[in-house]
Length: 628
Image (cartoon, rainbow, N blue to C red; front, side):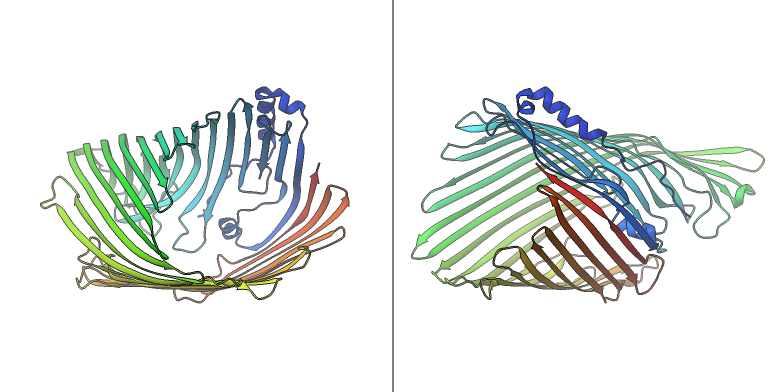
């Protein structure tokens, strides 16, 4: 099946660019009268793809044609009434575009207006994902008004609106078979925020009250009548009328104070979210192509859910003298969720002669999910002029309770305690080299979910410095492992290693540079599964990723050259792949303030097991940049 997204077209004009300059003229004519200065860069490109175009768009989602690389404009004189306008991405090339206007209105007032639009594309030919396809856009507008005329603090009001539209395709299950469905998206979000930040008080205080409203009215429809596997039962109808609405008011406060020997910071957040949903959903099938009859399933539902969340955190640091420093902290998070479901489930059976039989059953159910997390940590550090060392401990507790259904015989309530410790050392001599090494270990009692580990170990290291006045070097590493608990239901064995090395050279005048990045990431996760036959199974994910990159730039007179070459190779057992990417930009200054830059980009993607998603893509064009 080939999915078509012809109804959704990426923006191809610059009409949106006229909105903010026009608004700027209305808000502050004096700023426009001051005349703009800044820079503009536009480009035109061509694109050639061999292989899977969908795979290329899933990873890059670039197109050919005209594109706005960037606009940066400054209006008005320097000071309280100066405005800055920036825009990027408009045209036919980039999957994202945006505009931002920021400036002063005088007497301590500032205005920020923002517009964003981003396209998302996903479609792979691999059988595991072949019936999944995404093509949607997320568009948002926001405006913020700030008052900074008080010496004691600032006040800001921000509102924004976002909407997601488009469609995606997903498999769904019916009559013990898998069918393909289409979902037309209609989602929106409205938010408002009022915030106060103190400036001259002894205690820095931030208070924020926000409110958000989410609205979702997505609609399902069949994307074909036959099942994905050969089956005589055909789907004839699929649809929904559900509307989900959620209100989320949130109150947040933070405070911090710092003295010569002591510093304290605290944060608190409370949120109460209410979700309401109502509507119907239905599926209809012709059994054996209609030769036996038809079945229609209809659910008419009314649902609601409430989640109350309380979060708090506090950190204290103290200078004990003689190089000793103490750090203590604690965190608390509590969330309680209750849900209710009312309605009717209807089964309509019709034989080939048209005789119908309706069977219905009421739906009246409720559930809950509650959890409470609390933790505390204490660390002691000694700081010397050329080195420092620290040791610390951690204790935490998690309490989880849930009830899947009102008809469940027993509710689940589990408590899980954790203890851990860490030790580390850092070197920071007066020379150019610096580094640190830290080891952490955590031990867990009981388990809440099957993937919770019994032990977790982590080792991290960093090293950076300069080989000479023009050459810098940095390296980092991170090694993690976790083991499952003794319970036969706790089955997760995970290990990961990450190593990186970077080296860069910069010329004496800063007009030439050359660098190399090398990294390796190894990750393996073994998770236990309970198969439909109730036998024990395993899921293994294995990745062994090696990547390197070369990059450089060179400037001589009117010539400016930028180039990069990147290679990625995943030799893990799960899905080995090999890819290349290179770029070349050659800029030429034709007149003062104007550059013409021909460019070339190349991508290669090769999967070892399959070739349906492989591609080679070449994109080339020219960019024009003007500074004034």
